[in-house]
Amino acid sequence: MKGLAKDPRSGPSPRLVRRPTWEPEKYRDILVVVLTVTTGATDAIGFLRLGGVFTSVMTANMVLLGISAGRQDASLALHAGAAFAGFIVGAWLGARFVGGPTRRQPVWPREITVALGVELVLFAGFAAWWEVAAADPSSRVTYALIAINAVALGIQSGAVLRFGVPGLSTTFLTGTLTQFVASLADRRESPSTRSLAILAALVAGGALGAALVTFVPRAAPAAPGGVLVLVLLGANVAFGRDGGAANGMRPVEGAHNNLETGQVNG
Image 1 (cartoon, rainbow, N blue to C red):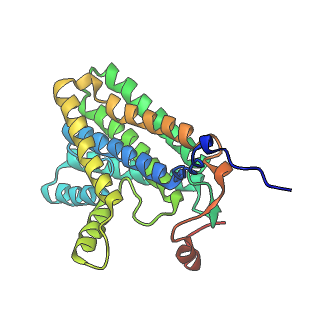
Image 2 (image 1 turned 180 degrees about the vertical axis):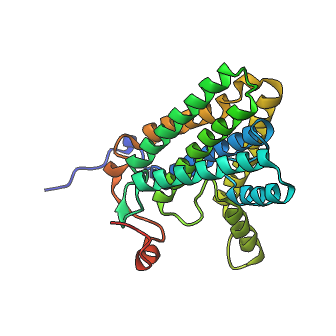
């Protein structure tokens, strides 16, 4: 029995087109970069309008505490102390609730989304108080406002640790800068574009926060709050309620090293 002849009019067989692979880790990194904008904006608001201190740079605030002691400046001491204490409380709460990275977890654990939701509530409280004060809070009110923002960024900082990815941070950026420069000096290592993007996002956030404080002061809280809303919406669209677990649980980058030193729970 003869086989069926191929119809010459049918043309060549269609090529199989390889669809681009969806890499959830890249989406996670993009969201973390955007999240860093909130850090820069909140720090700018604190430095320019809330006593000249920072809400995420605790090493700088410790130096300011020393300066306040040397100059006997009670106001500076109280502002720096409020930021320092608030950040510690927030970081403890964030790390306590979110926990540490596990061997296999979703790319975007749901606990991180919940923690960022709490941060958003704090930003909303700050925005309401800021509006009541007509963007010109009294010196006593600034202590409470700087503490609220510091708690918010502390929660964010503690939550981001759950990712368990070395160098992935939205607040500890002196280390990020050091690692980036070290990679430039070491020819065997390629500079991290993620680190560069995070550093650029910090500067962009600072510029955004400063511009709003200077030209539209009442709208200043919209910078960190609005960006955080975008991150939460992006996480929900990209990963859903299960944090991307439906796409498979992935080993945490560098988790085996942390597990050996007891730094990872689970």
